[in-house]
Image: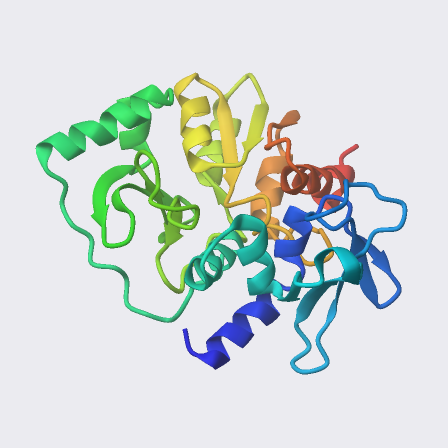
Length: 288
């Protein structure tokens, strides 16, 4: 990324990386305050970490105001992710782009390799170990590929837009930023994985219960158990800076047809904020 692209990324992601990592982040006038993750317990009555807009470029920056304890903790959102996740600069850039559903740059789609027979079987074993049946994987177009950055990975297309593809590393990723990737220019932050299939099943099923999960793999596992499910791209990417859902209205309308919706998101700050956004979205509250 060049300097202009990095500035654009910081502008686009806004507060999201802070919101997902600081569970007590709250508005305080023109800035936000939270307990400093390096020296304070969450919920501190006088939090010292300030998040505010830079006068230089208008992006969100941070600084611990307790100068005697951790004055080195300050900088832009990239520095924040670097310091909280113990990443390099490049890793932090990829992490922010992936979490927020933003393509790192407008580059051509990656050149995907064909796995060997043993690698293909490894992909099948990985799915089976996580409760995903061959039948469901095949029906959803899931395939094993060799990704230039991830190595052996699962290719998982979104049924509402086949150009949107999530790649998931098979096994342990090389680092925290190499677990998921998208095709450049086709982010999934406004989509629900498996929503078209769920919409079809709602037309024919006597049991109108849908589970909302936080990963495509978990969605496939639920489907393999005979349950209807959709997945957000990530609990962080699907929210606006104000904590509202930015998922396409058509997808939410389809989901709202279910008699019951179970939010089975991760029990971390990002997952809780995502659950709160679903519970308060007009697509669902209007039916109550």
